[in-house]
Length: 477
Ligand SMILES: *Cc1c(COP(=O)(O)O)cnc(C)c1O
Image (cartoon, rainbow, N blue to C red; front, side, top):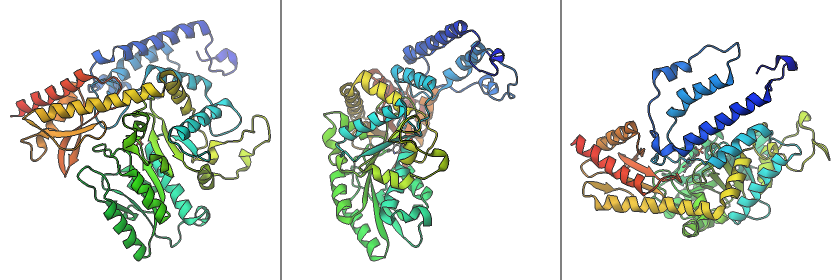
């Protein structure tokens, strides 16, 4: 295994042995996925597993089969549960076997997708063109893969900042400019953090109230913009949510597009939770106006079921990305032809230089399942959420707290004014390892939150959730 005879090569000395071991590893992980429902959703890692990862640096080689055994015994049984059909916590995708294979192939291909002239770049380009067409963006549109929507949303703030202040901001910084951005109070926490990271500060994000359905109040937004202008600040960015993290609410996107256009502001949509709902014909109308955004941040690793991680930023004009990130570095000199050629180097349109081929698992996923099937899966999770809402509404001991727009349902026991019961119920359900909702706060009070993202989740899991909550509630008295 060490490749001593190859002058330091790390390739196997005996490819036949390696091949056998590799097939065995593949079988093991396929078995795991195929039987996922029968395994615990979550269980705490025992001390032996923790100890296996508190080991000294390995100086001498350990046989691959032994390392793999450690993975099987100490890692695989103690995951976060998001591949399990009973997982309904936070906003997490379940992954697919096809996506897993693509991830393995991408590892073997091992392309550095910062730039240069190779087909890895073309795969990423293909996804960008597909996204452009799906969201009806113009020919000028650009896109880039990132770890997740937190990064995509951060880049959108940087792009909006540059559009407001001009390219000089890259050289000179913010100067005296007082940029202010707007989003609803329900916006994801990565937006205030993006404001921090962009050097604008959290205080420069105006958190606008929402209506009873959790959507940004347009009146309050317009008043805030006018007040800021009167006070000498420069409104530069509106962030709309296409699916808020708490309750899946969709801001009035077309109205936000109108306001942003009238005010000369950048209109970004955080589509991490919901943007792919636009691919489901029965849901598309909810996202009316999404095609008018200046940029959309989204996550293939959530509703599109691609394995982690696969965030993506789609922009209306690729030149904005280029203006924000391109730099002239001698060691990245370009050639007209050959390996150092290529007409698109992602290091010019995003912050990363070395970057993997996240696009390959997306390409495999979109091709092998097709957009229609992915859309149907997404619709199916919303139908499950509605069935959960119906069941809660029919249970005298439970009360539903939010309207169900997409795939999120928030509820708690009727006699739980402090939310303390909800907190205990969620904790007990996690420990039991059959279903996993998460906890949020609605109007400041802890509440049980189920977000159906996983394509494996079915009616029996919805029943198990409600039954589990009622059982725990009865035990708490
Ligand atoms: C998940 C999520 C994010 C953050 O995305 P990451 O991929 O976790 O970085 C942002 N906004 C919303 C609405 C989300 O659901």
